[in-house]
Amino acid sequence: MPARMLLTIASRLGLAALGTCAVIALSTGASVAQSGAAPAPAPDAAKLSKGKDLFNNYGCGSCHSLADAGASGHVGPAFDGDSNLSEAFVIDRVSNGQGVMPAFGGQMSPEEIAAVAAYINHAAQK
Ligand code: HEC
Image (cartoon, rainbow, N blue to C red; front, side, top):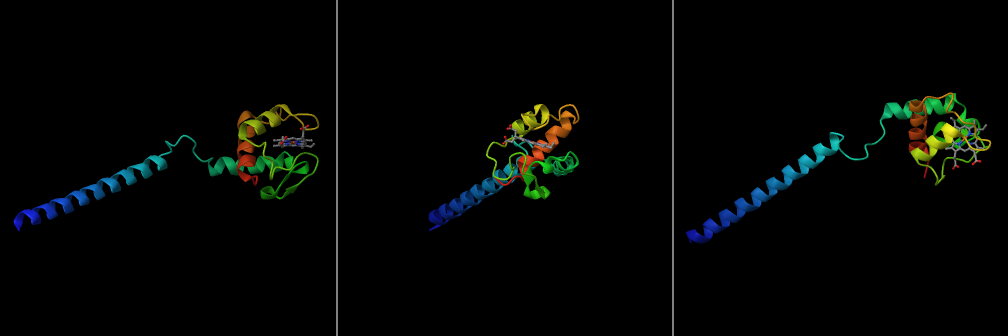
């Protein structure tokens, strides 16, 4: 039955072609993600480790606790479990201070404040 055989071959080819398309679609998807075109790229390791150094050098840990930095201060709120935390919120508090919380805007550059905010936001256990 040659007609039926042809049909079988044709449908196998079709399936194979579909499979190839799926593989191509998957692999292009992965390369887009890796190229950094994603809308919210993960903070880079260098920025986070700079933020951790700043956290320690500016004594944030003497008033705040953060397990990742080995900090256990109790003057200000603990960062672990702090649901207020976002990078924008930390940048605002560190730049401008509030109440007993000193403003660091005059001592730290905007890049340093952004790095410490990225670090706290990343390291705090949510
Ligand atoms: C002298 C103690 C002290 C030091 C040093 C200090 N803080 Fe604070 N911080 C506080 C206090 C107290 C508050 C609470 C202020 C308020 O809400 O009235 C606070 C609040 C904050 C908040 C807001 C937390 C929240 O959930 O409301 C952030 C973020 C913060 N500090 C980050 C930092 C960082 C980063 C550093 C180091 C660059 C730092 N702090 C150094 C005492 C301190």
